[in-house]
Image: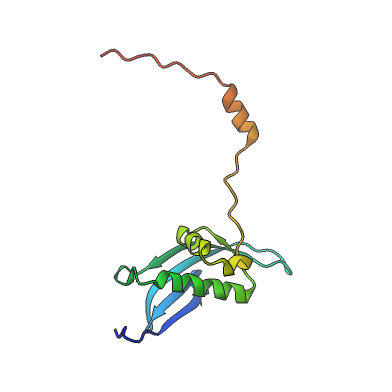
Length: 132
């Protein structure tokens, strides 16, 4: 494979719900997504960016950033809103504010206040000490 003048391309493989990064035609990375919320028009769909993977031999070359940036550009061009589940995508977004218009914040885990209150009211059970 010739990497002296790399030809990088990000494309959408919708059949497998993933964006693909190709280097000189060879698949070197994927960003899996999940179309979580299908909402009727005119609302844009919300798509979860789940996981970013770069082939180990091509790691630490900045290719993950190329893949995520290209994927966000494609999402923007389609009118998608992106929920960054992948921790790499979250880190990328923290230093690339130009994608804020595409991002939907992650919701904190929901807790049931009633369940939490019930948990507080229950007395702790005493466990008998073990004999040595």
